Amino acid sequence: MARKKAPGGKKAPSSPAGEYVREEVHHVREGKHGARSPEQAIAIGLSKARRAGEEVPPPKPGKARARTRRQAQRDLAKGRKAKAGKGRRKSATRARAVSGALKREGREAGSRKALSRHSERAAAKRSKAERSRSAEKAARTRARRKKA
Image (tube, rainbow, N blue to C red; front, side):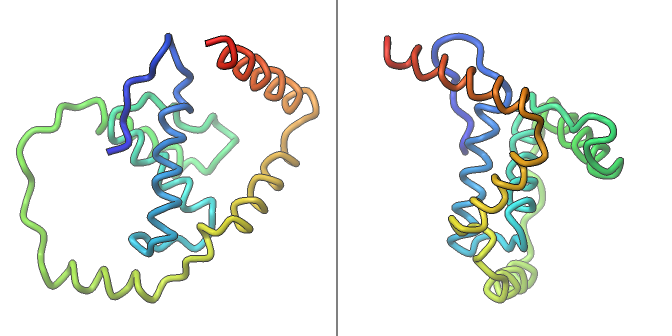
C-alpha cells in the first residue's frame, strides 16, 4: 500500500494522503478504477488514505456536502479501528462484473489535461493571500530539501 513512514519530522496529513491520491490517479489511468472526473479520483484516494489510518481531516462545514463530510468521518473511524479478521471471500461473479464495468469506463479523468484543468479551477477558488502563503511554504520546503 502507499503508506510510508514520513522521514524527517512531522509532516502535514496531506503529505501521505497525496501519495494515495497519486496512486489512485495511476489506477484510473490503468483502468483498475472507473472515475468520471479528476475530483472523483481524488476523493477515492482521500477515502483510501483515511481508511488506511492517515489522519486526513474531513472537509470543514460549508466546504463540501454534509453527506461527503459524514462519509469522511466514517472513513476516519474505520482507519482508526484495528483491522480484525480476514473478511469474506470475494464473489468471482461479482469480480467479473466489476472488471467488465471498469473496462467500459473512461480513462480521461486521470489524464494530464484533466488534472491540469482541475488544479487551475481549484486555485482560482482560493484567495490571493491563500495562494501566496502556499507558495511561500513550498519555497521553504524546497530550501530545506536543498540543504539536506
